[in-house]
Image (cartoon, rainbow, N blue to C red):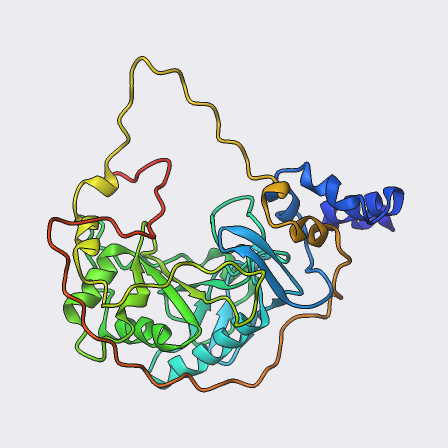
Length: 349
């Protein structure tokens, strides 16, 4: 029986074998010696127990995760083979609520991309964040009028909102006021902390949005994100193990921090010293680099296979709170404080 399930459970079975041989108190030490993405990237099921986020969005894990259903009212989950549709209950509730609300403004339905792995943590490929069950990618592509097969969900391509023949320019043949209404609606929920979009999309919103701009500042420009927008929820109230980001500043973000993206600096290749030795490969993030609880979560008993989603009562988003406008700072364009710097900068071409 163990041999038949070894391929499906991989690291989970190894971890539980260690628990039985050396005792549960020493099992976390076994996990700590491993690269975190290899440990968490090969776990198929969430841990049993309370739902909690540990650490930060880009350095943490989660316990008691629940899976977003493969489809529901106003949404379908994509790329099911990745097994990345696990999140904290409040994130699953947000997605279900947002999907229903989006239909009220004429959006036909959401296509949901990556959330997190069953126990969060670093992924084998892709995201640096999405580690604590509070991030979700939502495609710009509209949901079709039928329930897609698993194969369709693997094969359906993304749609970029950019005109690839120009530098950082939204393609007006694809973008519409409805796209703007969708992302501005997402930003209006009080539990949403940030939304990441391509700088060109942020600029488009700044130039064309004529409605309430109260929550415009939550929408942050970042590399990529032309095929989806990334919604991040705040750490839940009282969640002392969840590490929040610094608060988004006041104002709409349509200032010199946005103008910086349209200079050469963000896209310039790093200067190379011809006399420098080749750099060493970066050290992988180890389980021991994560919050202490993550090693235990990695080897904790799994939740049952029938655990798929949380059903919770929705709360009505709070009314927008007025914010005073902020005058732009003097000087030239400046990089925003929360922008990550990639090791390899994208080309301007």
